[in-house]
Length: 142
Ligand code: TYD
Image (cartoon, rainbow, N blue to C red; front, top):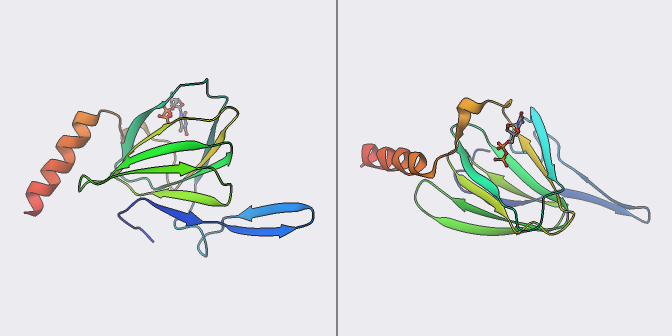
């Protein structure tokens, strides 16, 4: 899958009296081949992670504990806001999607799985640069 829209994905959850086990596995339930995982934790109260988009990377974002909110903006200008609070649910974020993480509940831990190695050249960190790129793309397609 490479959907052009951010969307919530249900993660397989195996429950038994000992608790829950959730699993993502490529290609059956993970929409891309993972090559990197990182996690964000111990975020001070009121702090947001600066927004960015990726030229080519796809991501899944999972709130393993706690709760976060994620704002996304797609190249067509559509804006969405997601609340992540379940370890058996992931937000899929396609390339060229502006995304911001905020409203971290205390002690939240957020896992991010990517299909790319860390590469600063794949980041678009300036919202004006992002806006110009998607506007140029739209004009070229008209
Ligand atoms: P940054 O991209 O600013 O975090 P956010 O996703 O919240 O915008 O990353 C913070 C620092 O960590 C920055 O110096 C780059 C570094 N970093 C790595 O070295 N490897 C990684 O996989 C990631 C995601 C970040």
